[in-house]
Image 1 (spheres, rainbow, N blue to C red):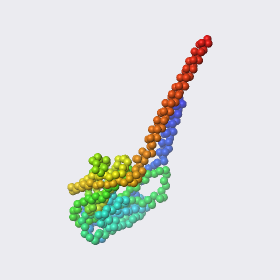
Image 2: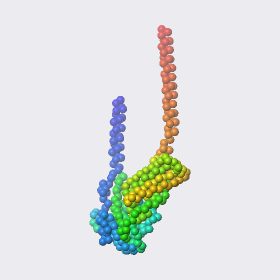
Image 3: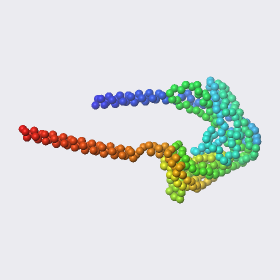
Image 4: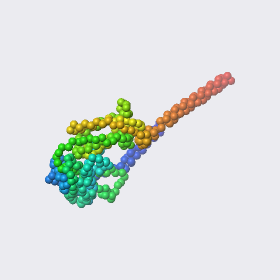
Amino acid sequence: MKKNKISSIWLLFIIIFCIFSFGKTISIAEDNIGTAGFSFSINYPDNQLSDKGYLDLLMKPNQKSSFTLNLVNPSSEDVNVDISITGAKTNKNGVIEYTPNDIKNDDSLKFPFEKIVTGPNQVLLKPGETKDVKFDIVMPDSDFDGQIVGGISMIRSTKDDKNEKVEGTQIKNRYRYVAPVVLQVNKNEVLPKLEFRNIYPEQLNAKNTIFITYSNINATFFNDMSVEVSISKKGKDTVLYQTRKNNMRMAPNSLINFPVSMQGDKMEPGNYTANITVRGDKGIIEHWKEDFKISKDEADKYNERDVGLYEERKINWKLIIIITLSVIILVIIIYFILTKINNKKKSRNLSHKKNKKKSK
C-alpha cells in the first residue's frame, strides 16, 4: 500500500515537471502584440464626397488625379511597408475583401480597380519619419453608372524580421492596415442585380461541401444579404442538406462561392436539386431552382480527402469488435479452465483427507 502511494506521488511530480518544462518552450512575443510598426492616415482630396473614414471620390471620365496616404514611423529603427492595391471582392462568408486574395474577378467587372489606381509596392520609413505616399488614378474613358471599389492595404515587411533571433516557438502577430477607395463619375442610383453562375461539389476545410456561385453583376454594393439553401435528391421532397445565413454583403461586380456543408456525410453520386433564395436591401429577392450532378469520380475523390470520413476509416470498428469479442471469449475460456482446475484440486484434497481418516 505504501509503495503504491509513493509511486503515485512521484508520478504527480513528473507530470508537473513536464508541464512546466514544455510550457517554457512556447512564448508569445508580447512586444509585438498590438503594434504594426507604423501608423497611417488619409489625406482627403477636394473631390472627397463623404466623411465616412474611407476615400469616396467623385471623378470624370478619363480624368487623371491622385491622393496620398500619410505614413508615420514612431520607432527608432527602419520600417519597410509592403503595399498592395486590390479590387474589392466577396469571400465565401459574405464579407468584402480589400486585401490580396485568391478570389476570381467576376465576368461582369469592366474596370478592375488595380488597373485604375497605381502606386508603390513598398515604402521605407526611416526612424521617426513621416511620409506622404502618392497613388495615381486614371479613370476609364467612358461614362458609367455605379462605383469602382478597391483597397490600399499596408503591412510591415517580413524583411524587418530577418535579423531577429527566435528562441523556442514564438507567436508573432502581424497587423495589416486597409484604406478602402470608392470611385464614381456620377451620383446616379444603381440597384444590385444578381445572376446565378454555378453549383458544384468541392471541399471546405477538408470537409465535403456543395458550393453555389452567383454574382452581383452591377457596379454597386449589395447589403443586408441573406441566403437560404435546401438540397434534395432530384425528384424527391426529402431535404438532405440545408443552410441559412444572414447579415452578408457583396462588393460591386463580384461573385460569391457560398458553401453548403454536407454535415460530415459521405458524398453520394447522383442527380440533385438545389432551391436557393437570396434576399437583400432595396427589396431584392432572387430564387433559383437548379439541378446538378455529382459524378462517381467526384464522390470518390472528395470522400477520400474528407478528414471526418478518413478518421472513420482509420478507426476499423469491425476489427475492434472482433478483437473485443475474442478477448471476452478468451477470458471466459480461461475462467472455465481455472474453475475446472480449482474444482479438481478441491476434489483431490477432499479425497486425500478422506483417505487419511480411513487409514487412522
